[in-house]
Image 1 (cartoon, rainbow, N blue to C red):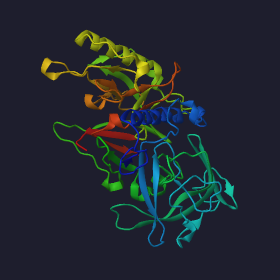
Image 2 (spheres, rainbow, N blue to C red):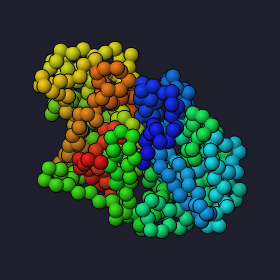
Image 3 (tube, rainbow, N blue to C red):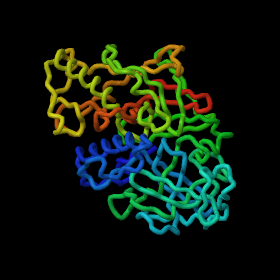
Image 4 (cartoon, helix red, strand yellow):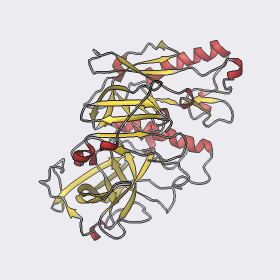
Length: 420
């Protein structure tokens, strides 16, 4: 898992200032919230105002290696935890988006077209007689055919045969790149569905994967199957909560607290609407920052305003002057007894709430940070863009230094603090 703004990738222009970089990450987070809403899957780039010409839709990229061509094909793809389909742009595309190294997958002798009767061909669609697919990603649209090949992964002793993926040959309105050297070839879906690699490799993966995101631009690793283990100790207790994996990974959030003060938020705003996804709370490492439905965010903001005014007599900066909505020109001074308040998200162990509640306490330095302003700090959480309730997401920055283990088959999410 490589952050998309990593200098090693060279995806963002070198001339980007710190503020432009953070604006870029902010837009990814907001677009993830819109993308979670089925009613908004066709929103264009203009739906989110930005001085930047391009808006990405995910925070992490990874590398896939496949085929028996020598050397095997290697593709950098965007990680998308809300999609079950993995696809890459193939060399015979028309139209195409700019790609530095086109992928002639049919040159691999282990590659085969997928027939429409294959159980992974969902929905049942055809493209030139083979299993077809179409998919949108933000404002982009791709259409093509499904095929299978041998896939290799880092640290694995061999390859996985007959893994299905899509070849995008009709690709429009993708903006993966800022220049002519784009290296992003497509999407790697980590959601749930018959086309997902998690489902296809269930015998090996067993519905389990884990990650622990490092703070900063360092790479992180996803572990699958038997390698997906989580451990704690006397000071770090592993917690488990209910999870509803419905293409995206929904958690049953019931409360938000500031310094143990439970906010006046109707928990129904976090209840999953599985028809339209217009509400719900999803864990989504593809979003840099946490996005809260408007009513929940306003309750959080009001409490923080009161906290900083009462404790330190601070007044916030004008919200229209910053990337984030709540910023201050001061920074707490521990030598004066000043600290950031602790923010806690409370989940239920089971959907009915009969088994009690579990608290996820965030490290304040992963909630408040110096972003986009010369001095001071901002709340690294964002509201949905208007007064309508919408889906909320737990973003990557608030997941720093917490290990998460997804147990899809048992519908559980485990987590524990850890130095990633």
